[in-house]
Image (cartoon, rainbow, N blue to C red; front, side, top):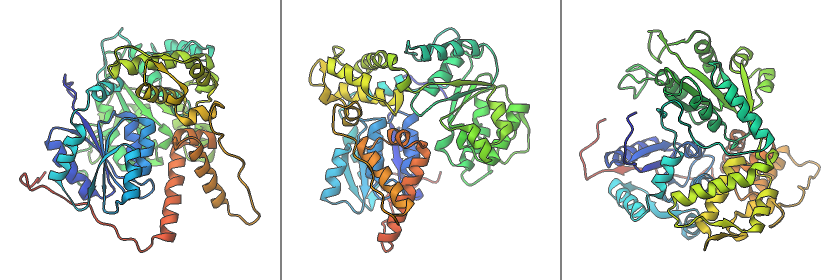
Length: 491
């Protein structure tokens, strides 16, 4: 991918209707936007973790997370992203909820591409370049700076974090595979980036794959590439990430999400350095250092038979555990100050605000189940909401104040009655936990003791069960986007 000097706005389209999604994608791509697509809220949130988004177009009614729930989750990841809602079921109540979640426009189905274009221009008009600058700051280039230059800043002075940094310095010069372990939001990608920049491969590419964000068939083509005609839509040969990372480092995030078939193919690459593209017969070789990361207990998965033991030991040559932020209290304030300067620079503030003393006490007292990512989001929100040059308690998210003992309680115990189903208990536990943390899925997953992917799966199952009971006769309008302004796109 060739680097460009001018930032291109990124639009994320979320719609479970493939035809409508692709029609919008083609139309907006012709207008010069970089367009990402997802067929559901879960995959859209995964994309938002890895890409700074300038605008979201989302359907309202979707399986699992609906459009409004997705936007609520998006506010945790990227609080200031504007959105356009597409729906055939919008009403006054929906509109009010939508506005609270950052929606700037509502388009009724069936839609026309010319109307979408006008709405996109309205939403983007007058927006400062801060969102694009933030994307540039957060994004990891595919080709990294010359060896000796450091990547993104590592902040922390606690004994636990200094131990991690010591391991990074010792691991970086060797070529062994590394496995980074830690909860969501602890900074696993940042550590992988630091290892790469301190290694002999620093002049080569650093390529990342979010394994949890892609379906297994798509992920296989993403990793190993595909030949022309290998599947529907494969109009040309496409190199995979193992080829693109040749001479550099490949970071496999959430490696525990790989299916059994892909585990076998990954093991072969790690052992032999060989693979074939999807639909191809030619055996290719690659020289890549693999760094994997997971928030799951892979030893338990091996014992359960869901993860190959030989692959686990091949990945786990060097294990690096990143402690959660609750075990690194000394790092909280330095990290918060770092994010304060970073966000202030990106948003163009003339001066960097300061934290009020009660805010500092609150930040130290909070348990941060979403870890460093949650802290960064909280600081970013506070900078945006601050009325002056002092950040006060009211500028912090309610969930942070509550968990630090400075706000409303998180709720009492869940009552159990004999005969009550486990499903209903689970539904109540998930619902009340999400309510307590202000809808923060990562924080809720941490409190419940499950992975974020598991929480999204439970929410989807609960949503499908509810819709099956109460809306078996619902009818949906299909998104149709017709472009009368341009010729028919045959590509």
